[in-house]
Image (cartoon, rainbow, N blue to C red):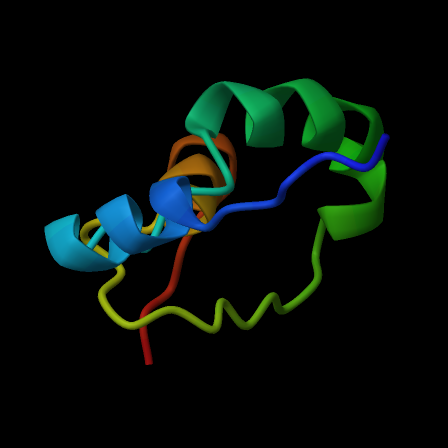
Length: 69
C-alpha cells in the first residue's frame, strides 16, 4: 500500500519563513568536517537569502576566515 504523501511540513516551513528547514547546522557540521582541506584557501559562494540566518554561512564563518565582498 502506497503512503499518502502530504506537504504539511513544507507548508509549515513556508508560513514560518524558515529557509533552513532542510539543512540544520549540526548536519552541515557533521558532513563538512570531512572536507575541511578541500575548502582551505578557496572561495565559497553561499547562495542564501539572508546570511544572518543561513546555517551554511554560519558554519563557514565559524570554521574559516571570511571576507565579505
